[in-house]
Image (cartoon, rainbow over all chains, first blue to last red; front, top):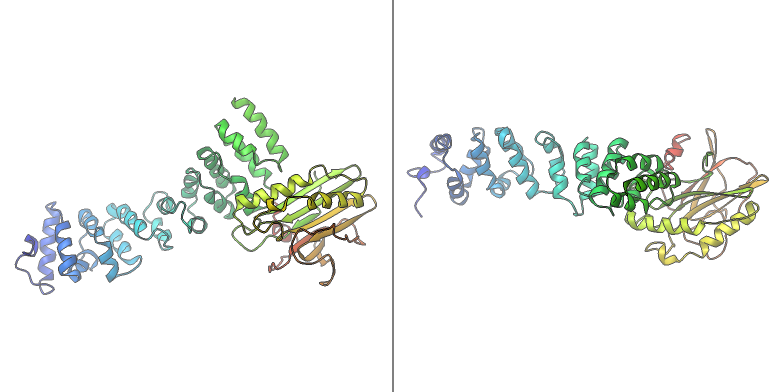
Amino acid sequence: MRPGPLLTGLSLPRDLELLRDRAGEASRRGEDLAPLYEELAETAPVALIDLTLGPKAMKEAAAVRAALAHAEALERHSPGMAPYRRLASLCPEAALDVLTVAVARHAAASWLIPFADKIEARPGAMQLAANRGAAPYAALCWAHAAAGHFLALVVEAGSGQVEPVAALLAAGRDNDAVEAAARAIEARADAPVVPWLAAVAGPQIEDLLLRVIPRLRSAEAARALLLHLTPFPKARGVLGAALRGMR
Amino acid sequence: MTSPPRALLLGSPSRLPFNGHLRRVLDCEGARVSVAARVAASSPPEESWAAVSTLWAALDGATGRDRGTLCRDAWERLLRVDRAKLGPGLGADLTLLMVAEDAEGELVSGCGLGLVLAVEGADARELVDPRHPLLGEPGLPDAVPRALGPDRRGEIYIGMPTGLNVNRPAPPRLFAACGVR
C-alpha cells in the first residue's frame, strides 16, 4: 500500500519532526487528518501518539476530534483518564467531544466525575444519562452528589429516575431533592419517589412531601403520588385538595 | 400526634439507611401504641415499601382499652399478615419494637432486637441485659411475644436490629441516626 500524501518520503520515527510540521500545516489549511491518523494507527502508532498526545501535540479542534477516532490506540499507550485529559487540555473548544467519547468508552469510570467538572456546563449530566438503567447508576448518583454536581442530578431526575432524588437528599440538599422528586414524578408518574426518600431519610418525610406537592403540575403525577401517601395523612389531605383543583 | 414517637429503630450504615423502616403511632381510648419496624431492608426500596405498607395496613384499627389489650391487639393483627407480602424473606427478617402505654404504665415488646436503649434527655442506657428474652433473632413470631413493663416511664426506646453493627452516637444525634428529622 502506498503511503498517504503526508507520509510520502518520510521514514518514521526518524522524520517525526517533519511529519509534525506537515500535519500542522495540513490542519491549518483545514484538511482532514483522519486518513493520516488512520494510517499511523496501523503503521506507526508511536507517531500517532506523538502527534495527538505528545509535548508538541496538535492543538486544532479538528486534530483533537480526529484523534478521538483512535481512542482505543491512544489508551493502549496511556490508559485511563490520561489521554482524554491531555486532549481536552489541548483544545478546550473540543473538550465536550473529548468527554463524549470518554463517557461512551468508560461510562462508569469514577475519573469521569472530576473530569466533567472542567468541561460540562452541568458537570455529571452526561455520565448520569449514559448510565441510566445500569448497575452502577445509584453509586454514580451518590458520587456526583458528593462532588457537588447537584444541578446535573436535579436535571437527571427529570428523566423519571429516583436515584438522583435520593442522592440529593443523602447529601443534605433537601431543596434540590424536593425539586428533583417533583420532576421525577412528572416525567414518570410511577417513579417510586416516596420509597426512596423514606429509605434515605426515614419514615418521617411528610415535610418533604408537603414541599413536593406544590411543584406538581399534572393530575396524573398527583394521583400517582397519592397512592404512596397512606402513612402521611397531612400530605394526603393537601394533595387530595390540590388534585380536586387540577380536575 | 405532637409528642415524639416512643419507639425508634437505628438505621443501618448504608446508602439507604432506612430502607424498609416503618414508624407508626396509634391512639386508642386511653392508650397509645408506638411501633418502629424494619422489614425487607435488603430489597429495592419499592419492594421494601410494599412490605412496610403491608405492616402499616395490618395495624389499622388496632384497639384496646389499656396498654395490655392494645399491645396484644396490635401484635395479633401483625401475626395475621400474609407473610408473602413481607418481601422475599417472608417476614423472617422483621425487626419490630412496640411500646404500648396508658396512664398506668407502659409495655415494651418486639422481635429481632439486638439491643434496646432507653433514652431520657442526654442519657441512654441499655434497657435489658443481652440475654433478656426481649432481645433475639429477627422474624415475625408465631405468637404474641411477652412484653416487658419497665420501672421507669416516659423514656424513648431505641432498638438496634440484631446483627446491625453501628457506632451509636449520644443523644440528640442518636435520634438523627433513627431518622428523626
